[in-house]
Image 1: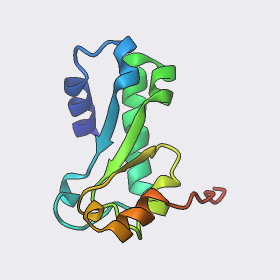
Image 2: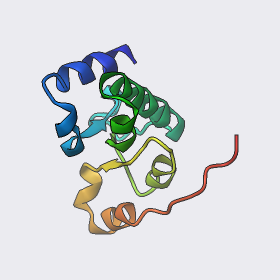
Image 3: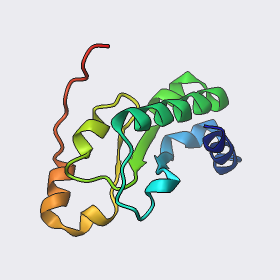
Length: 118
């Protein structure tokens, strides 16, 4: 989480609150890059919530609520539904899975599922 804070603060340095409506954040775990491994929906949610909280500290709650935070990291037709169901995961940054039309079609037409009550 400390790494996310450093990266967000450096990456957003010099970006005004007014320009934040044009920003999207993409999170991909370093261990997922090129591996085919995907975070569990719970891990993705936890990191995305942390990122949103960091942004709230920098820009306020309204901007943090409005910013789109995408999950990257081996998103597939099998993982997309659980990831997108998370409240702080606003979309997917699709890599290799976009090269197969059938798989990509399934990803972009993901099913929104209700989260179970905790």
